[in-house]
Length: 576
Image 1 (tube, one colour):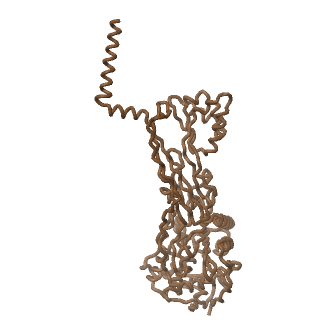
Image 2 (cartoon, helix red, strand yellow):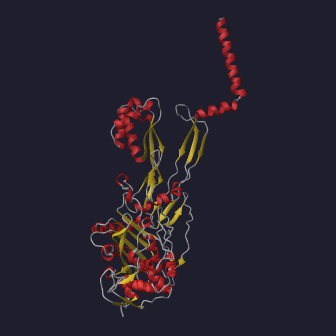
Image 3 (cartoon, helix red, strand yellow):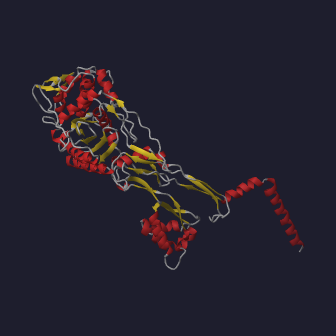
């Protein structure tokens, strides 16, 4: 009894001292330590903004999904049955799931991230009805983690882009295209929930519960038209495959606004099946690849000369069979004797010699100044990543370089730069910065301001009318684009059969075939530019790229309510 009394007294003294230490000497530190032992925290993921086309067709959206986790102390006794159910719905074999479901010394294992909600519903239903035991689902837990889906698959995939896997295996941040360019805005801002729970993980009913709500991402409506985009992609695929080319791209623009209605690349990839995607096919060559533009550049040269008063459509030019330029000899694509062409005839027949002779009349600084004003040598500012600047020569370039630049060699441009420049020339001389964004809204449906550069004049309205008239002659009798006439519409165009500069060898190897055009000629509304790189079956722009241009335009014009022409094209004077 004495020892028992001593033991009780000692325990009482020790407990009292401990209570004095905890509650009297340093209560705040111990309270904080106690709170930390029951404190739990979990993120509240923001919902990524939706991307749609101009008509509201969904191009990318976040669908409900969950991360599936397990508590091996609860799932271990039923691991074989649970593993079989998981394998049925998540793929793989039951053996893949047995190890995590029975892992010792832990109460948390990740089974799979971003499982579609409807898939988990099937798993939960099977777990609930497995055999006679109704407790199989007790050790399976979930947390919200939405998944990104691309309903269109390959439609506009190079423009819209995809997400990439983070270090934890979750597809969360943008990797390509618009998903990357506007990643921060689309992603929004995650929230967080802080609560109190027992060591076993059960929430304490009256414990602290603090929630910082997530801020969902901004949604964007693009200027793309999904149906026109699909048509453009199919037309492009046909000409690339039939010509056995390396690749191709096509751009369809609204001449009046600079809106991009379609931007196709081929080869491409399926955004909903990234396992089959090749890295080389996931970029956007229409803005990232620079090329020597070839004869489409002549449109810009003629616009500069018309704006400076150096030519009119009827300016007379004597075109010899060849022309010396330093130690080089300039020729045309087809041999000919001496010709007497008008400026219209030079453009219509795409004469390199005639273009150089006309360009030599104007100061080099004037030509280069115009090219820079058309946007060459700098990014257009379109809302997409990976845009190249191209290269425009300086005003101090030597005479032989000026000769090359005049007909499309000795400088580099992107497809979008060139399409935007020609659109500005045809738009009464007013350039619109190309855009892919139609509008944006926040998570509450409120409009988000979208910056728009102001249009700028690049040539006079009179010069625009002259160039438009000369480009219409390209599609008339005697023009290189005579096969590109559009039934019911007067149209303007320009062929391009450019020697292809190979950066690896430093030499010209093969060709780049292109065709650019717009309609109706009397008031251009829609422009299409098709580029095919290194075709094997043929190399002329009219025969390789032209068929895709024609097919695209025949679909786009009536789709956008562009009325057929009611007047006949004027008779062009090509020679004298």
